[in-house]
Image (cartoon, rainbow, N blue to C red; front, side):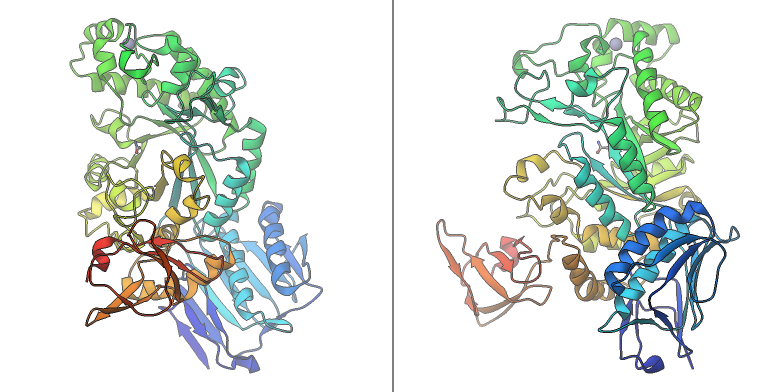
Length: 599
Ligand code: ACM
Ligand code: ZN
């Protein structure tokens, strides 16, 4: 008898082939899964992982290490033809790049994929199955067939390492966690007003000076850190290692050098790139706060060729992101050289200067075999060529506009996908794009927010973002700040981008609580909990955390009054409660919203 599963992530293997009842949970859920009671496959020693081509070796070695932790012996990884008794990993170019199949029988396990990227997913799916089937003795995998492919080819996260420096080991951990969620693009925001984070060998001063703030650096520190010099940068060697580390986990790193605005940092190191007038520095403690490159200064393009040339050589990604957001054009309006350029070229709008600048960046990238990616402001005039990829961040409307113009667009409007936003009014984070949690992320619906069928064809994918202006402020008291801001919002994004949100929130929330929370705890992710549920009757309220754990600590909002809480609490006036739960990694902190608890 066969069980065909199309709509559920979990399969209860009730005594299939004599195995004790086990659940197979695969996240994100595959498109198709069929389990049968035919003979199962035993993961027993010796076991070979046989890859058809050497390209598959790096991901197979990672997989072997993961399997070892499940089955307690190390499988051999060999390159060669598929065989009985082995886990065979082969490519079938008829499948789409990330499409894959998993077939398990008593004789063998076959993983088939359209490319090494799909093969990575096939191995990770088998890892999840093995983890579900692991028990006291041998790990026994039931006969099954899985067919799967993602909804969006581009499933990204952006990390701002410019405002707050994030060192290479932390980026690796971040890559590991994203990879577990089938995120396949890591957009690294490598330069901004506050930091330059990637070594440029022809201009070592960019990182040696621009990688650090405070102390004797010309780069202004965050408020209060005047005497402390702090920061860091990636050497090209370190970045090469990160690129390879990410690639082996099916993540492409896309570099961003933010131009022509957000460039105060490089302008602090090379003041000559700025426009040709004396700024007023009285209100800025002597710092020159101008942040834009002068468009009319021809020598600037030689420096930009040096920088982008090295970026193109270093990063294998097809696209290089050159920014284009929030350019302060008042600097160009005050610059006699930019004004003369506008007059010469008959331009009546400074946005044309940004077009001109970006066209030159695209020409540099093209000459190095790359394509251009930009923030949505850079295509406001619609003059950039249609092979420019747009990251729509300002609003859903900006994404609608870019797709209406025919640009391939990464949809990441701040009000759904900026994970530096607060998750409730009383919690940490920004709020300019909104206050939202994973539920809102999960709810995003292209059609629902107005994308026509034609516009949807131009949507290249979805992306979340974490901007780090507040990260360094919170880090000393909350080293888990990044985890707390990202998870479970990244889980919701990953589900949306891989398999969609057709299950609806109620079911997905149940999946979060019962499957993702324990998984994230096992992975050491210090995720954020949803508000504890407060049930009040006759002014007596009971509080339960959304992971089902007991609330054991509550802080009253009266200054200096803290008390342990173990039972129902009488609340006859508003309280601010601070909850800590017992489970797993210790504490999943949540600061409750006052109004939520008003009784
Ligand atoms: C942005 O958030 N300025 C791209
Ligand atoms: Zn100028």
